[in-house]
Image (cartoon, rainbow, N blue to C red; front, top):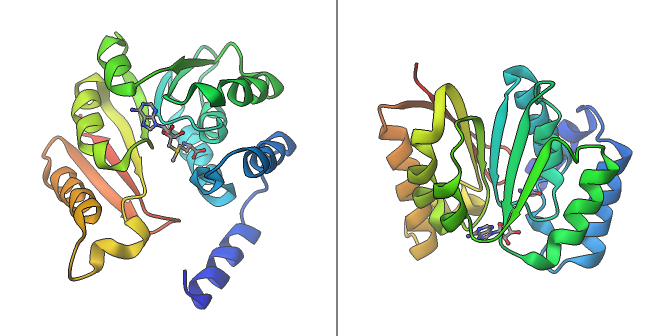
Length: 212
Ligand SMILES: C[S@@+](CC[C@H](N)C(=O)[O-])C[C@H]1O[C@@H](n2cnc3c(N)ncnc32)[C@H](O)[C@@H]1O
């Protein structure tokens, strides 16, 4: 990130509602105990996801890629009284930290954690979703999108992270990963079933709304 952008990003964060003490602790523990802590969405994007969820008031949310649970907790903040968030994480070593913070934030009854491969688990979920957050293997965005689109209610929202791929999508020559991400962005942009907005927040977040 260049200097002007990082200053702007800090300014945005400084003028965004703070995250809870529990999320601060989770972020800190993630940086102390995991190998790729930068995968955690962080304050600004976390508050955006929480805000979108509170505006949407979903009954059902699906998250693909829990990591340490940071965004699951942010998204769950907007659930209806009886709402449920289903989140899938492939790395079983993260289970203890995810469950620790789900308990700490009193969300045990609201968050269902699945440990395993989302590609196997999503097709088995007989649930329709008001909101989906895709944040797992970036090269599989397209596959996850195809797996979830028919499970999303009309008016429901799909969010996909890292769609700018550190800005590489606008470079002239794409490496293989960038090409796959660019193809995904083009595919969903052209999909008549959804309307979309691509936000340059953090590493790029695309918001897709399934048409009524
Ligand atoms: C970028 S991190 C998720 C970050 C999290 N949403 C957050 O912002 O705090 C991606 C996670 O997806 C998980 N993952 C990758 N492939 C997966 C798969 N096929 N099924 C389930 N989880 C997967 C990884 O183990 C990793 O923890």
